[in-house]
Image 1: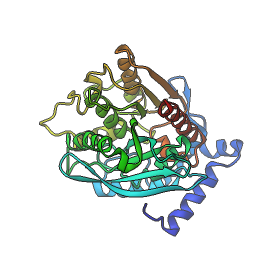
Image 2 (image 1 turned 90 degrees about the vertical axis):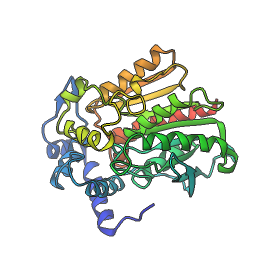
Image 3 (image 1 turned 135 degrees about the vertical axis):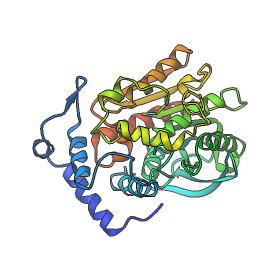
Length: 348
């Protein structure tokens, strides 16, 4: 994990203090309630968006790729969730679509030698984000679910456009199955999961490996993007002002999907794939997220195929709430809900 600078630690501390002011004072600072589509935006999140706007803008995408990557790394570490107990980590290499990939293994002290595990793919629109940006999220998931988490550093666009990241996600899952004993995990209790773009990759892996000798046992999907071919109503309703904007989505799509890949190809848009026989899932969405409707539509598609699926909408939350879970109570509660579902699934 990259060490935070003193300035970053101070900034994060000030932000956490501000977001945890008494509710009445926070409402005054955040402004009038934001109500859309019958939902009221969480006041901590509203204040967070105001703070981000003061820092130079709250929308994802649109800048130079390296600048966007640096911004995400810094912002995620500011408000990432913490842990109460130490979580051991080690760096490993996994098979990828075109060669070895870095990955990080998280193991809580209470985990048995052969534990259930989550193979985690980070968010970031397939262009930004990393194992480091989601370090706090993975530590928290490992601790709260008392399982191993293996976070995969798949290749990013535009240097490696689709389907490179997909190939990495599938190859790394299959490599973990083969090397389960070496990694200290139970191959028959492997879940796949991720947030946003990572949720997309987890869904694609679940489809691609469903007929493997050892397929995933569970899917943990936080606000997944699953459809690059169609914009649903939530994209129009929440097109601007809530971190992930319509312009952000277009920017990520433009970097990720080359002309040689159709937007409805199931490798990039799993909602058009075959969901029969995929692992049981929980799909957790945000009410103020442009991706809300497609994530919930994917859950319904899995249900129609006979898959056991739980859908949990967080009506007050925006996209990316996992990365704010260290300071935003609604994000923390959603992370815990996902971890609890994961723990139940891996106990089977």
